[in-house]
Length: 314
Image 1 (cartoon, rainbow, N blue to C red):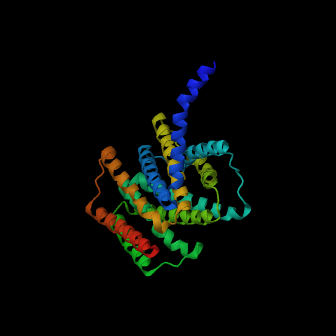
Image 2 (image 1 turned 120 degrees about the horizontal axis):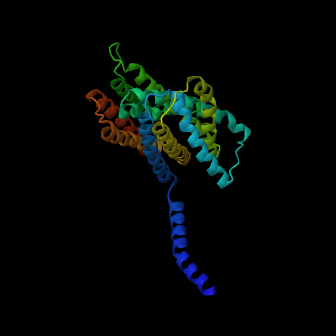
Image 3 (image 1 turned 60 degrees about the vertical axis):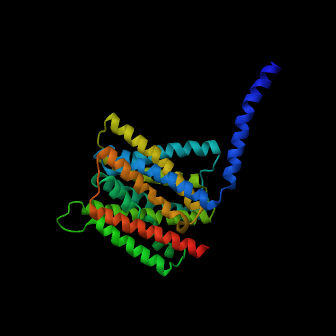
């Protein structure tokens, strides 16, 4: 018996040492580097979520949002139980949690509507205006005054969005494109609230749980009155959308807690790359030249601001 225990211990010891080394390595990574890793993981998660939401077909946006967030709610609920995280936030955090949840839900609904009407890369690109909206609303919520270069960057990004929206009475996709723009605005405001909660040391799991629960409660009445029957495949797509949304939500929440938007937001544009690749191989989507020009302007503005902020920090 003693010999068997010794053999088991010897076999188990290397894996235990490896796990300790991995944890030690992660502990040495800077907060900024952690933020970059988290935001790129979030970008992949949200791109996959967009794919499965679009694959779910022409269902009401409220229905898609409910199932997306209900799956995420179950995942985060289990995680919080395992980690023994208190479900009740401090009273002074509740207004910011409500703000993050409300604007996040509005942004999500607009984004889902846009995903059903636009190609995958266009919808994701408009949603990626969120960092520029975050700069604008940081003025009011975080009392951060943008520099002149940041104002120019925001202006260039919004000009780029016009090439994607293509405003005009003869364009049937104007309304979905505007919805995509509003989705980016909602997300930008929500992430600004996340920044405020991060400054208050609010638990990232609880932020995601609060948002998911709030969104489900808000969507439930609309789901009851506008529910459309789904096939088994559509249900699977929405469950997968919720699973990847949970990955994205946890990633983006942890990212903005680890580092401010000016240091890591540029890496969020990897979502557009993921979405463009997925859209091409799954749907055969090829953006027109005006949309591509819009992508270049928006991503170019984001990259320019990233290097500007990095130079100022140095």
